[in-house]
Length: 459
Ligand SMILES: Nc1nc2c(ncn2[C@@H]2O[C@H](COP(=O)(O)OP(=O)(O)O)[C@@H](O)[C@H]2O)c(=O)[nH]1
Ligand SMILES: [Mg+2]
Image 1: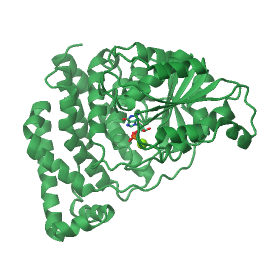
Image 2 (image 1 turned 30 degrees about the vertical axis):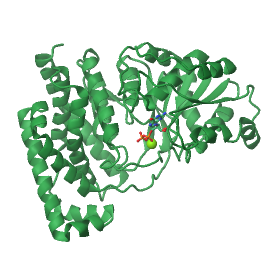
Image 3 (image 1 turned 90 degrees about the horizontal axis):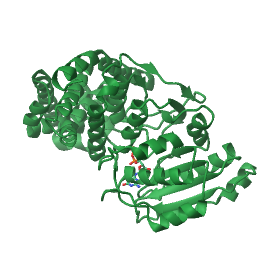
Image 4 (image 1 turned 120 degrees about the vertical axis):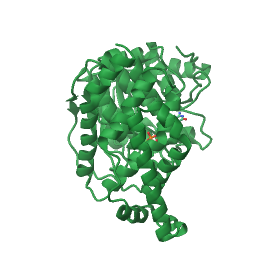
């Protein structure tokens, strides 16, 4: 169990608040530009929807130098919310902004959440809602949607359901959604969405677990929370939140560390929880709470040429590692796809001259490449086999999850590049059907995974 001594300053804040029924926790690191809106929405949601409860908003910050915490404490106070919403809550809303302590020397989103869990337990809250501090699309109702199922419905974990752009959430679409669904049999569409509702019981269970590691202190936290709820049989539902609009990331440019932390955690937990998934067959939807919305998330530019180029570069540097971590046939197929990606990138360069292609916008590069790559496809089943080979490699301890995840990253970029090219003319619904088809491939291949696990790892 990690050592997290709450600082005296945090203890003072807990003593000042005393106790609470419902808490909104907001992790942050350098979010001065966006966190004000999130704090206002959280306060308004608590005041409007839970006027009879004792509410608190807690910001857990990583020591941002950009004034994030100052924005939080200078955001309009709760009486402003009461005035604009014409609500007279029974209890005054408390607001706290603090700098969280590192967990075993590591800071990150997970460390921020660990402090939020400790505070929630100390205050005795029945429902903890956590929301990201870079959200543009949060509205007060999100607080009701994420806490309502816990307070009114007896659920322990509320997972978000959003309309996202077809190219946003690529780690979710290619790994955490299909893997969680096929392993545990629950169709949780956004296992690492970042905006969750957690019951007081589940918070206590999280704090009692002894498998917190450095990745969980970073971006491994979301899949750790979701898997922890699902694998231990807590009551799980989804809440329909509408669009997720936040600081966007290009999967080829910004997602490297996050990918490694999420995937390493997912693999580690898969090996740890074998007794929870080996016997699960098929999958079922989980109950969804909230009114269905029409939402149109903003466009997102993704540079598919760069994705294919990273896939090919990765194959040059990592071929031996890929052969060590994948089954021989899987490695052969992946390496030949990477070679094909390399040829396509060369052709694109030769056609336009590297500078000419590089100088175009990502969209026109995708279009230019699309003409070339009409036949390029990273098949669903091959991707599922890649991920399942890695589950086996983790189970047999031939490689550490973190090393596997790092070596997988370029393969993932190739997989995403293929999806981007294939879905470039598709509507959101059509692209969603591609994600579903991939999830069905993971389910189809699961019996083979189970058989291999039993033969090579044990039961
Ligand atoms: N406290 C803290 N929060 C972090 C850190 N890194 C990210 N976060 C928060 O975690 C949330 C999600 O991060 P973000 O970069 O938007 O990830 P994504 O939306 O999942 O791609 C945001 O609220 C960030 O402020 C960190 O190092 N420390
Ligand atoms: Mg974000």
